[in-house]
Length: 244
Image (cartoon, rainbow, N blue to C red):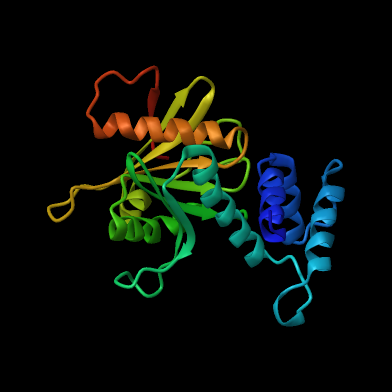
């Protein structure tokens, strides 16, 4: 086993832990205090990276951009290790796509292509929707997911409800939003507006915390059900949400 492979295994194992990923993210975004004993684990990993060194002798430094790339790598690696993806990559630019578009993660599983937008930080999902929809139409993936590397998707409140007016939703190209739940796992279905030139697409949005692997597994199953026009939702509960 090479040193690089060993480092990847260590990092993947640690990134699979919510508390470690949160601590690494908080450090990257300049938070001085990190909860629990995860600071030691994070510092230990950073020290290991520093001891190995970086290209051209540059000092290793944890930045927001580096963490964002690490999160994208983790999601890409997760599809290979946990979902038997035939291929998976991150930070991808396509020759025929918009020059400004970077596809955070694209993976291929038996059911088809998966496109994942990975977002870190505390920003709102809404400003990213139009760009995501454009990128989604570029690849026309069978599965389109929007993952937020934080404890909530739309709102910090206990219900995590979207606070969006109908007029604003229309401008963003959003027709409706619904919460989907099964076995205590929840995510959101965001449906695009149907037009004469576009049949409309949808994507599933979710927090990347509190059981990420189960969320992705259910999101894949739910998408498969919709694609097959199966009237039996297999215990998925879909609740349409009202706009503000």
